[in-house]
Length: 273
Image 1 (tube, rainbow, N blue to C red):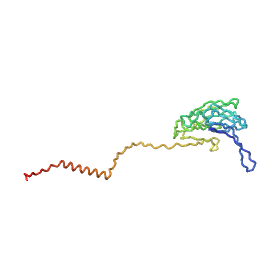
Image 2 (cartoon, rainbow, N blue to C red; image 1 turned 180 degrees about the vertical axis):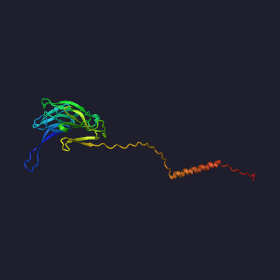
Image 3 (cartoon, helix red, strand yellow; image 1 turned 60 degrees about the vertical axis):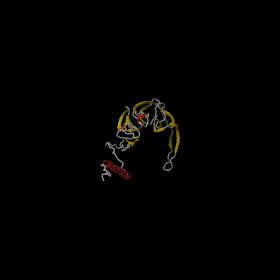
Image 4 (spheres, rainbow, N blue to C red; image 1 turned 180 degrees about the horizontal axis):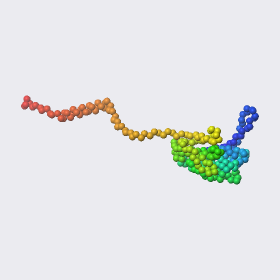
């Protein structure tokens, strides 16, 4: 499957005029096999939002530099990529990235590698790739705000590490990574089923984000009957015709037996008369 990424430019509205908003479509690439995700982030610290494009069918992660939209390679050698998220870990104005790759829908087929991408002196050259974790079906990567201005990147796998189709039973371990250590920290694993999506949002307006999850729940287990059962032996009731025939046969047999057991009656001869 081939996918394309396009950027849409919004024409400015005329002041106080109710005019239709016009969009201009510009195709940036049409050869990104299995295009899956695109995020807007300032990659080169020039004050403009660039576009990072992830295609699961490619091993190169691309970014398009604003305003020329020239395609550049952010990182290479990443097989079966599924999600990427930015976070400026060192405060230099250029984000680091965590990317989830080696993904598969079934946990036993998914290595679930999480890698850190770090830039060099020239951000336009491919970045350094360093593996930091492995969780089968590592899937949704999202940047989240924590208390006291801290930030982290959330990793929400698709399923439990031992989940099997068709039910995919098990608890999904939602974790996060905080710089500079980038060590795995468990957020929670109480959710069961297939985690299709997550959304980061400051629900109560306190400056600290909450995490909303979209889950496909597990189907209920079929009840198991542990009481041993016995097969009742049943006899087929004879039909009326068959019963009558059997009774007649028994009567005839009884008469025949009685005749054999009864003493013979002596015959009187002519001389005795």
